[in-house]
Length: 252
Length: 275
Image 1 (cartoon, rainbow over the protein chains, first blue to last red):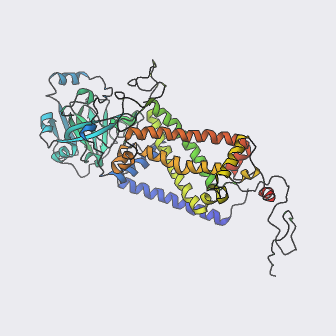
Image 2: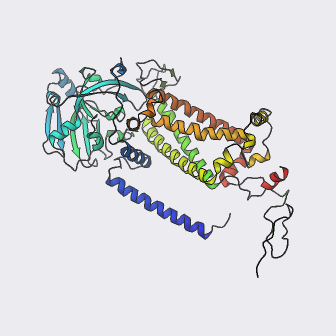
Image 3: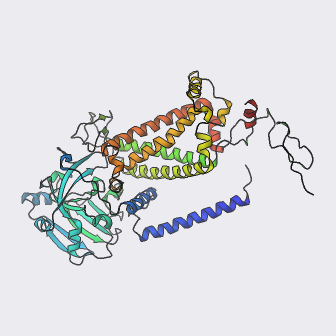
């Protein structure tokens, strides 16, 4: 073992101090610019934070790839859906004419929207790929109302940082940051491949977030809440997924 | 009094100072016991090597867990249980939606596997950056990995391969320096396989693809990228198996010692004498 020289000790000490200061400053800046995900705690927090921060810097305005009509999957795969509960069956029996989407939280004019209300907004469509975290994928045309249209209509508070959205199945809820909430391809989707959105694909109303994995595209959406923090929702990790071990941010 | 630095023209092996005011010759006695101070691997090489080892195992285990949730591979943009696979791994799955032929479903381990996979990927990428930049700076690539001009011939390749085939023990020089086949193998891993595995992995990120669509379209689509990611990982696993086998054959203790302490167990002088 060689003795450690004074120069080496000084250099190492300075480097360690600079590194620590760098991390502290970076964390402050990251917090300020919204680069820290709600599930940043725990042993996987550093990797998750790096991924989210790097992608937010890189992808805030980028558009998910869109495909030609000929690329639409002939037989798309509808992943297993939770058995519809009684409330769902009741609404299904009347053709979802009583389906409501309530919008509340940090908005000037909370609202309860029917499907025809949603369809009265400008209609948009996109041919994008659903990418499941398991590895499989399919392409479909998704028709719906961009979330930004609804948020603008209800008067979004400037303090808004997240939009949380809830399924009729109480176990399923999600949230996205404003970069995704205001993104032109984030849809409240009610149509698929020129028809109504089938129940097996999340009908009558599904959130579509094409820049993230399939599980962020929550099925059977009945409620939106605009908030400045996810701490008050569930265990405060941002969505139901981190509570069962999956990452909140699913852009990978 | 001013000391005269002497010219070290003394024969190697002599540790005797030429005179009282001169410095002793900085070489160890020939034929002496292994000199524990003989350098082999720089600290940055050792530290980045072992961080990569830990991260690679994390990636391998978590990657295998993720594959289990859909052990079918496709080519092109899309693929799912409704489409024809390129090939299917004959293993059970952690999802009941995948037809595997097995009568049971494995537990879902994807949550922590995904978190671990991406954290370990960051560790490998950042470690690789430190290694790459410091190696460019220090000349490690040029001196230790790019084959010497004399070795850039088919004959030099064949000589080393023939030695491996004869199962001859490694030269003592190989305790200090890689032979041409080792150099090529490491260069392929560092400059081909690692960049490819990172690229094919990034191509699986829908957000990254939105910013850099060419990352996935150049690979022939999302499912092609996934299949390639699997094969490149397989190539890295093959390298790992051969690498560990060669370390064992060459002398597990001495090679591990060199990569942990940074010191080779054979003094350089003994090598230099022979060459």
